[in-house]
Image 1 (cartoon, helix red, strand yellow):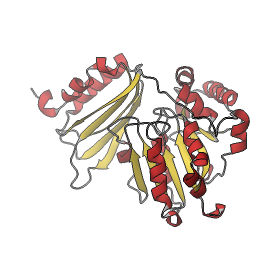
Image 2 (spheres, one colour):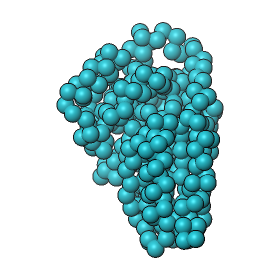
Image 3 (cartoon, rainbow, N blue to C red):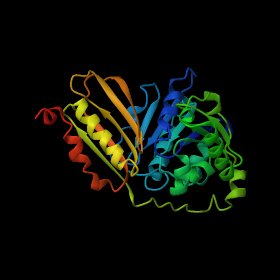
Length: 327
């Protein structure tokens, strides 16, 4: 097969809560006239990112309960194989990794798996970096450093929350890890589409200069066993005040251990879905439109962090049910 028929693949990566899904939604809602297929990978058993992706025409494939760089890597190859059977109907594929993914084994897949290598080409690795938290993440999590090191483009996101001198420092740190990457400052991932996809930027020779065994290494990646994920779902509506009180107290007291929180909630007396996303003690929430017709109004919440078992999260969440709060 000629190179002209290879489908370009963009890998969106970045640590927990950096803004990957926000970027993905920006790409999908642009008037680009392209047909994309999207593969979304989540660390936890209960995935909600698929619901956070806008209701666009693109097909979205969800990979849960494992990380694309290790435990569900075979699933990635299987999904790509299925997509290649109708490659002539696609302009590109976008893969959103978990926030805990090492991009090296993901990138390696596009060169060492013969079927994938024949039918696709790795267009670029785009890393979304949280300008508020990246400095601490680089010191604590090997994955965050790998995500910067392999990036063809770094979207330094949430720059509206950091002073100018702080941005200069974090850019300098990114440059020390990866002097070749292009850095784009953004707030809410508002980067032009042509600076994110269709770049033809991944340079295998550059990677081999830095990591000579890139193609031959098995890239064994072991996640920090202290970092776990839990998720809960409730079919009864929640009391808004009870949830805000519980969640606010939780983030104030245990936010350092909560690397990521996110959820889609059904509040009593409210027609719209409410979505929130948090990183440590920072939380951002908004309404998300009405519930899909015929779909159950189930509240779902996901936490990724350390020592989650000690936080009584399930009991706290269930205590927010409107019926419980009224008693």
